[in-house]
Amino acid sequence: MSEILVVGSLAYDSIQTPSGKVDRALGGSANYFSLAASLFSKVRVVGVVGEDYDQEHYELLNKRGVDLGGLSKVPGKTFHWAGSYEGDLNEAKTLKTELNVFEHFNPQLPEHFKDSSFVFLANIAPELQLQVLEQVKQPKFVGMDTMNFWISIKKDKLVEVLKKVDLVLINEGEAKMLTGAANAISAAPLLTALGPKAVVIKRGEYGFAMYTKDEGYFILPAMPIPTVVDPTGAGDTFAGGFFGYLAAQKEVPTIANLKQACIMGSMMASHTIQDFSVNALSKVTLGDLEKRLSEYRKVITV
Image 1 (spheres, helix red, strand yellow):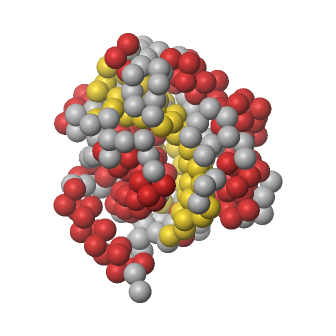
Image 2: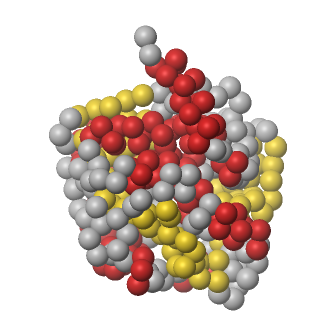
């Protein structure tokens, strides 16, 4: 089984949606990604938390077999984000961002992490993404995420990262912002022109659009979920399911692998949004996933 390295945030979130609110709920890109990917493959985490990070949250990742050898605990408080979703559940309104110990995050890979076959650079500063890439040896496949904040203030560095990865996962608004395109369809080839062989544009309730230089577009809807409780972390869950599936195939990814990985990522994300935080995601089994895949096939098959 191939090892997956993820470098990203571990956080506590305060979230309000039409379904209710939670305070100090487990969040962060590395947490969502790891819980999704570890259902399929071995995962290694590099991140930083504060003294307030609960033991039960270490144990949650440990139970999934996640290697926390690259997780540092330092004096101070864990990264905290507060946000709300109102009319549009595809877009969060940030109410507060407290970087805390994450402000000085300096990703250093343990020696045994440097041979990871698959690498996912979650939503962190482009300079830190480059720093990670300098430490890994010969990965089979590297993917990255980003956000509008980095696009607006560090676009040049972000483009530098794009030249060094195989895949970028990005939401539709960010894809349009980065390329200047009017929609996801026109943005996709412009993104691959910047370096990656493939791009997956996450479109929330409308599913995803993948584009590869070799075969063009692959587009499917999302699994219909009547009540979305909390969309936080859906994108990172998608990435986790995507990379977990790829790593489980034990080969350099093919186009067919990438297509199946998109579907697996989408199915994982469809669970996450049904409860706050990682509550639903942490309980998903392979049996649950197979059942949902069966339901999804009915949605997309003539």
